[in-house]
View 1 (cartoon, rainbow, N blue to C red):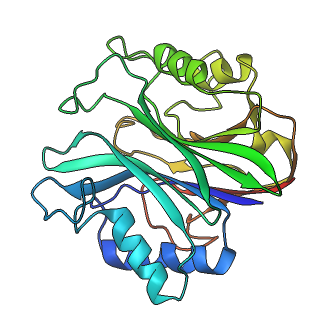
View 2: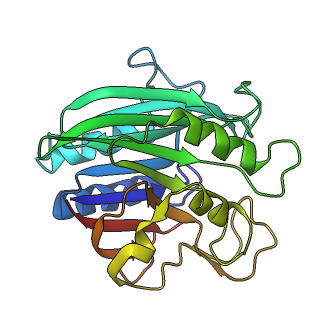
View 3: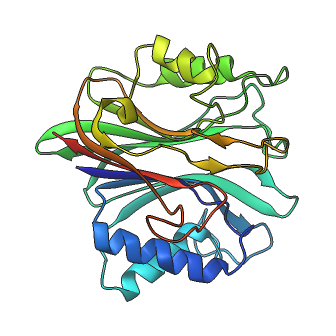
Length: 263
């Protein structure tokens, strides 16, 4: 099973349409079973195409690019988390090649107000893979040191919602660096989750942020803040950073993480 997570930084990128095309081509080439995306945005003023999606939604345009490549078997879920940069409805999304049995959407922040950029929503889905139920969640959490919206509260809410009797994958941008001891990364490990990067038989540096980005304005070092966690001790064949300029072109201010799991 192949999975991918990427914070898209959508509509904040130069040559955005070209970068969507690169993501679509990579998905077509590598045929991921499940994909988690964060910062999946649409203009507030754009024309609606259904109850939720608008015509410039990053996910919708990605699906259209996949269709142009002959890839038509991805199902998806998207939901709106908060207003970004005053003009965008920013959300989180999941795509899968497998039929979706159940979907989830829930807020883990204390704030429920979409006008507050610190409001955090999670989307999830359940599939059958080789006749086994598996659940996946696309996560974009806040910062450890945020007194208004502490990471601990969001992580507690996430873990209390998730059912752990089956394999569960928490995928996304957790805004907490693995290199910093006794903060968010280790908080999740202490809750019983395992980092697929650490489980992987083959792996690279794991670095997903190179220097200063939004939310890390003073950062001057390489960070690993994008993860694929699981609640089970699974066999992980490899973990690789993608869209970092070496393994596919850079398409966001975050690099992606792709993992192959032996199920």
